Amino acid sequence: MIRTSRFTLAAMYAAVILVVAALLLPFVWVVFGSFKTQVEFMTDPGAWFPHGFPLDNYVRLFTEEGFGQHFVNSAIVSFVAVTANVLFSSMAGYALAKLEFRGRNLIFSGVIFAWIVPYVAIFVPQFLIIVQLGLVNTLAGIIAPLLVSPLSVFIMRQFAYSLPSDLLEAARVDGAGEARLFFGIFLPLSGPAVATIAILSFLGSWNSFLWPLIVAQSEGTFTLPVALAVASQASNTTDFGILLAGAVVVLLPVLILFLFLQKYFIQGVATSGIK
Image 1 (cartoon, rainbow, N blue to C red):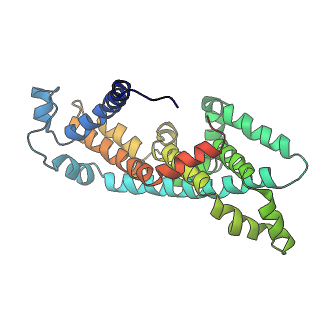
Image 2 (cartoon, rainbow, N blue to C red):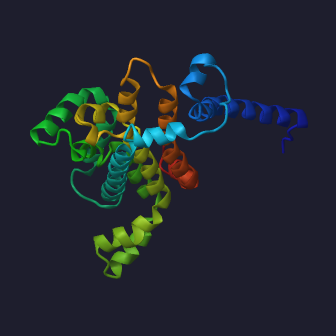
């Protein structure tokens, strides 16, 4: 057994602390900056700490900038996207891994191909479809492309392969149908993969900027990233306090979700073949 010297161990811990500090410093600066006034930014833009911690920027964010409605829009988009991704990707992954049918490998190849195709290659056709469906400037138009992703199907399919088929076969012998097998056995055992899909789909929908920017053409359908960008261009002078407060509001739900699901996320990545 190789023993690690105290000096080597201390050096490793110091390196980890330095890397973590370097990653966290920008976020700490954003949080502190969200409490600063415009005068503080103009007089000393590089200062780390504000003169007190007033909530004026956050109050103005929701009263003057209407971020309450934008927050609700983002929450609706993300909730529907996460729910649909978990359900549809689980169904597709279960079928591709545990059911025998003609063309299964061809369909999975299509999933992989859809995964590796650059988003810019499908952006215009995707928008034209939304226009033809009459979903421009609606939350439904923003949500539609987010309902399922090839990556989520791939993760669930790989996870399904790791589950023993004997368990499903035993249930089939007892007379269980596919719906019972899926909802009663497979889905409850797929917690890590479901958590991974939930986090990835939430990140993709909550932080999405380009697609909502094109589809949402009025303030009533703006999501948080779009509203934040519009607010930064609303006047000749950028209100940095408002922008940083908005950045904290956008970041906070993502941080909370990851803190609660990080254990399952790591398990899901480890068991689904993602390296």
